Length: 391
Image 1 (cartoon, rainbow, N blue to C red):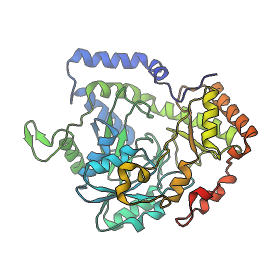
Image 2 (spheres, rainbow, N blue to C red):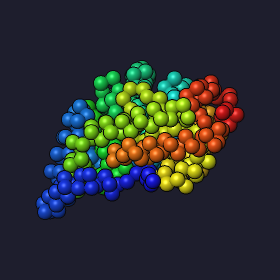
Image 3 (cartoon, helix red, strand yellow):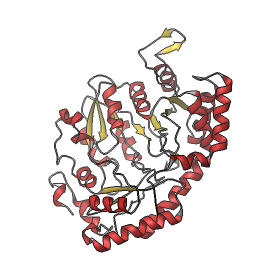
Image 4 (cartoon, rainbow, N blue to C red):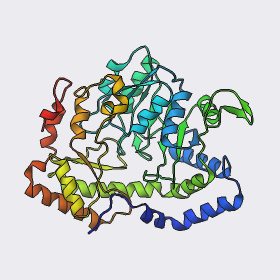
């Protein structure tokens, strides 16, 4: 059996009629930039989120950048963020001229360990960016309190958690801004690049509208320095056609995740769910990750690693003078994590095949086992312990 990691062609065919109709409507309108499709999508997405405003933009990276600039972040400021994220999160910080300050993750959830944040705050800290990774949300309540006490805005990176809920609030709506990516493989994906920022602030909304369109307050009148970051009409229409399916697709992701967990919880370390996890990715840990990945590939199962090298160990960010061992939980996890196939059109038979292949590999290679019980050791990781010494 072949089980791809993802299948965007299958996804397209599941919504072909609605998407084709939407694209044809745009092409026949002759209106391709900042038109009615964008306005309609922004309004409908804001309603879905329960937010006052949504501003569409060109990518998830630029969504974070625009949110940071709208929050007042600029040259030589500091932004607290995790190193365990897609590097575009960090790229957005760098684009503002600010510097990323890395904080470790929680061993259960792979997202920001909020108990580690306060010690990283300095007089130059101008924002905190919690990354809701894999579909799992950061524990926002204590982070919001810390931000309020220190006068530091919270900007949520929601690229991998569209539709997740924290204490009845949609991801992206608790902080000052929420930044979304509509990269094709996301829970809600465009058929190209796209992003959006949501906010409940009228002032923030009006500034975002200017920033995404060259800083214009009206045509040819530029009140501040902005960029060209506009979600085009075709992508807006495609997203609008898919938005009504998002709840259904997230429910299917959760059902697939439950099936994986039921079959694998005693074999590998399976995701620990806090709040409402929408499983953009289903990430396990194994004591022999690389061997397992190779075996699964030979058996026709596609897997990926999100992410093999944390940002603080990337060449581009070594200037931050963060060394190996400084973020022990992050480094421990990145040596063991493996993302299994996860998309709404996966069949139960495909999921069961993946489960069976992992079980077979662990049976022959006991060192690959990493059950919940085995993983308890990781929770004792501290900054003084090298992660390579932990099983």
